[in-house]
Length: 288
Length: 298
Image (cartoon, rainbow over all chains, first blue to last red; front, top):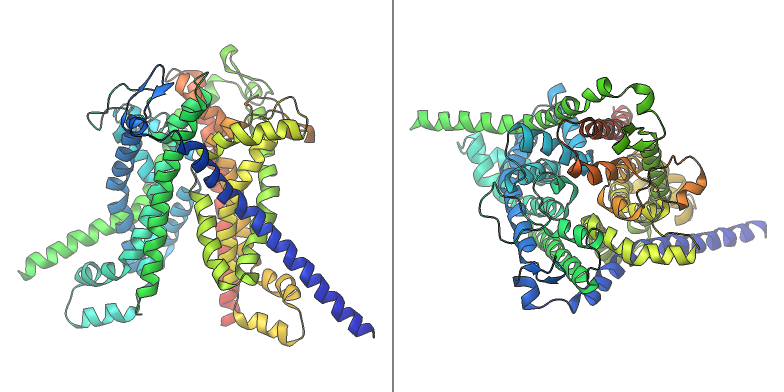
């Protein structure tokens, strides 16, 4: 009798517990979906060809956001230019060359720390090193370099994971056929790990594209009436523009604010979806 | 031919090696530049006024205590939100959800991690803070609490993904053993799986805290930015100002090389050291756990 009661009791506990945990997951996920749908609905009506391809005017209260879109594009490409080769090379070192010693542990600790440094501290660092010390000025170059160092840990750790997932047999066979270590890596291992590396690269760049704090004092311009001409020009950027028009400009039409948020969101979400698709397709196709 | 091949190999190996070392170089460079621009503070502002409770740079009051307490109270609130919801969601994804739900939830949570913080701040201003002002009957909706909720949301993906990894790596045999002894799935989760994943879950919490304390744009947009000493619970529902927001809001307006400029770098130094400590703790928890696993295996 007693045991029967107890066992029913603990199944009730389990049922209630599962419902509770499920509710928590729902409460965590619903706002994500809600946020995206809300911005899609609210911002949708602001989107027009003129909004996407025009310059802002009337103190940014009218017109389009083309310079901000192009600026974010430039910054993302600039970030990729520095962080992708360096990040992948560092990942190759850690996955293929590094021995398990004190130095390697130090490198890993450094990467963990880079990942944890607040984005605004990257901004300070970029200001100190690139803008002032190296005299790049407030520029696309300085902002891209700052963002690259920030994205490095994401690219390194995901690429390393992808490289390590390639079975050891691939290396053994390639070396035994007379290939050098670098030939093995460049022609066999990198090819196999490519989808995983791409996913990591895109996720890293996605973060860079959405960041504001690191570019605040390294490359972002409040307003530019033209597109930047060289890497030494400052630039407008979507996240900073959204910050400016939602906090710094009085009587800003709400439509333009939602529209800008929507464009930024679509930019970032597209990268996210591409990364997810690459990863799941690679997983499905993988033969090893 | 042979020779040029080995030369290429040699150069490429060196390049890859130095790329590997570059992470150490960057951390050192960051710390060096923070020190270089931040340390002059100590000779320009005396310690007693630096540890004052008044932050009013225009009149040379550089008390950073309100900023530190502001960061702490917002982070504390965010942690109290992100930890239960993050771990709850991780448990749901790894232990309860059917496979197809998991395949949807994981990318969704990852998506939250990718949402630009400025978008969350924007919605915080337009949606969350007016709602909280009416709902909690506050004079302003731009409070530490508003920041805590949004920061909680920003920290959740970190907590979920690390905690879920930890739960996932608990061997299936542990669970099967518990079930075979008659434990329900619920009992197994709480008394076997979670305790076995304890170190990974702790790492998740630490990384979540680190994520929250370093967040800048969202807190700058929604916490009201009033540099008051936040030591009472009531401060949670009034405006505060964090260290990160202070740097972001004021660095654009100071003259390079001024005292104010140096103090802002000094705050950056403090943030760097905090994140360094948080990450060392987070990673040493993992290392300890690994060593224990090695002990058990050998």
